[in-house]
Image (cartoon, rainbow, N blue to C red):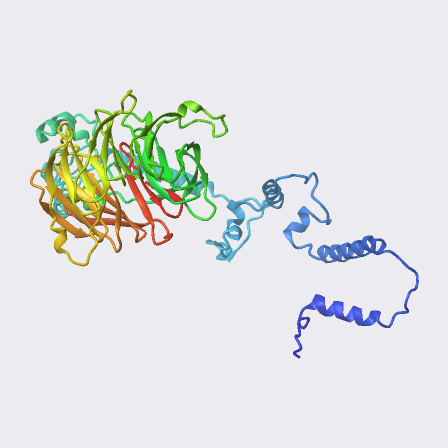
Length: 574
């Protein structure tokens, strides 16, 4: 047993102990009195004692404001914040006079008398009007004097050096040193006016501006703003401007799916994202309709529409270039065609049967990937049944052609060759990839990376993508590599270990400058296609059954990127 002296040193507790011991010597009362009779008496007793103590604090400035204990007059506000404001106004505690209390700082020190003082609302502030007038006159004289001098601008040689050396940071530093040397050579302002006018340039709008700009030969460049760091759409890939590259940060978290999110695709124009999930549904998200997240700085987004129709997990998704329709492929071997509703639709509206417009049936097994032609509105699909099919949705006979290869395995990914509209590129589970002519259905090129020579490594291609402007195909492999192939020769032009685990997804920005890759190592990586280097890594999703990130996407026209994960989340970065 241990004795805990919890009441020692606490005056109120010691007083309570003393009174409890004294009560033991009282005569026991046999009259039954309810406790409700004692409460008003004890309450009044405590209030009297409190009032006695408060009345002894007459030097306290708050005593003059509220000498009698009790509620404030008309203090019946339902909002606590309003009560706080009223109480502070009554006692004179404002940010101007008692801001240090709110900030938990020491009381301010009066500079003339070097004493700590609390500013009371009843006290008048001592103001030296003569001193204020003197400071005003001094300020006016300095402004007038500064206006006569004029602002000093760089000399002609410095401006030319700055325009010539905009590309590099080191050259900018040299131009700044040159400018500093020129400024040191500026003569005294009290010197001869003619000499001053030669070396000092007046502000724009003066009489010599036109002549100055004509002499420099700048023309419209004279009004050019060089600083462009705040532009959210501006990022460069050249090494000299890498310091101005955009950094992506998580902003939106999309939580509504009940199982892993397999695919994500942006609307071509609007800030809208579509996702496809293993919970058999697709969802439409308006990124402008957000709610604050509970534990993070990101914003949660609620879906505005849910597409239901698949009889199994939805594995692939693509949006038409017009943004009016989207297409999804699932484990049920079907391809569903959907009319995308308005992003401002009421989530509680009644079901609209016109949303699902068509179902493309020809595959006999899961549809792994879809690709949309940017001009012809043709659709490509690859399936676990070993076929690649070309569709023309919206027609009576939508199936245009079927492509098969022997001894290549199951197709895993497909895409149109963006710089050759009549060609497509297909990857297979055997690590082979082929470029086909769509009109003749003949193989044009085999993308040969000599992957069979890498013994002991599973080099299956999980995803491929065609560069938007160059005859280059980029592939993501199970062996953690990303490889680049020339479509004309079929030769591999670059190979790099990109992630710690299998690379599952790829996306290229609309300008063809950056590559985005996702992997089961829970990371998204941004690659500079010019230097083939990783410029940013983002840890995005958690693992589920040894899987993490299933898909990544760039917005075609806005500064958004998205990721879809096995943790049933989709995330958007800005």
